[in-house]
Image (tube, rainbow, N blue to C red; front, side, top):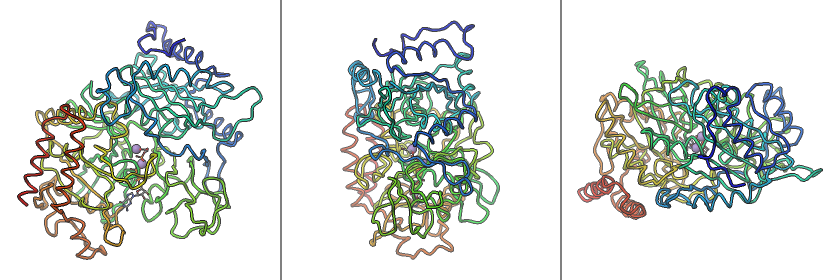
Length: 613
Ligand code: GDP
Ligand code: PGA
Ligand code: MN
Ligand code: MN
């Protein structure tokens, strides 16, 4: 048998499509022939089914139940040590022509990858149950909703998909009514021989996360970590969806979505793209330090944006839950998240307290005297290692978030007033800058650099270009992606108000190595300046890299921030940006003549402004 080519799936007559659409049925049986599971189970998405799966996971030792008095109906999973983050080196974009995947992706020739996958996938589910998991991204009934079916041999992945998407019968019904769907195959790659004892976290040292954007297929092998295994999320809602978006004229982005309401009562919607572990979930759940200000959550990781019938930029959060970074989440930084995690939460790779609750660095200021660390070993504050893995995560339903906006799942989305790009930069990049116009904003997005975090493998702290925070997620040539954004601006300009574009950096450090800006709820002060800009009510001064708050325009009242720190936060060093410009030029050169000329022009303009400064 050859791996299924999407085009070979027979189309079932519409009349026959009921609960189990025939084309899904056919695909499932073909996949089962390859993977050879002991059993096939269709997932309906019910609460009872979730309960049964959680019980099963407890019985196999994959998760343990936390103390129900302290953390009702919540669980702790400890992964294998090698399965703690996304694996960018094992993530592949398979297109007929290498140039269509572009220089920023790992490309493989589709036929060669199919042969390779067939090799590892054959018999991969022996001795295990194959779950068939229909899901919707976006509110079912929204013009933006998209569908998929994932097969997986991991019940942990099934319950995770249950939190992160609209999973089960409702999605399958929509497919039965004719909605198109993306097939996604996932196996932990740990077949069981008859009588073989399972391990708590089955996975394989060899891993693949493979996207075929042209045939809209996903294959994942060897990992059960969320970002590698909940295929609806990064693989579909970003990598495959970015290609759909290019073809259909919309945007699939690594962005949080918030509704901001100042004391005036007039609300604004903002979308912000930061790389993984650079502050999206925190900003999405911000408790503003400024009196009378309110921030409500719409999404914390992924946004799909399109131009509505009214010509305005609209956006939905295609997800239904949060897969958030635990370390750093505490009452002082993100009380909303702490509240959201009161119960019904799955924690992965955090530490456990003696009384059966969870802990991670930053949850409380004081470290518990004794813990069981994320590896399951005894831990004390003198152990000299983190108790929770730096990329430990919580998985919780969006509905449980106290700051969730009333219109968070509006099928028509929300109108976006501003777009924000950001990264983690110890030096050079000011706290906030406003782009001169859309095209300059695209240049800002295209040239974002950020220090690497624990969310993916690699050296933490290493600076790299991460355009639009999409480096690991764009399913096609990044230069074409830039062109798509430029084109989007032209379409917006024709019909309506174009959103303003800003760049932020919460992570600039002083000479002593500590953050200059207090961040978290105090980031509301930056929102205040942005909203003032949207209304044309607040001052800005020109700089070579964009507009900065004019003297006194950023409200720092009541902050313990000395004059020197404030100056440093906004310092634009021409020499440092000359060096940035050189680095950007080298980065742009990797795209050859596929790079839109507008971006080369923006670089020239930046150099001219730097020379004149
Ligand atoms: P996401 O992965 O982009 O959603 O990022 P998170 O919001 O989960 O944050 C990742 C890490 O950055 C956590 O450890 C946070 O505590 C930290 N963080 C988030 N916002 C800020 C901020 O404004 N200032 C500082 N210093 N750290 C932040
Ligand atoms: P994050 O999401 O952006 O919240 O870290 C997971 C990821 O990007 O791996
Ligand atoms: Mn993310
Ligand atoms: Mn997040």
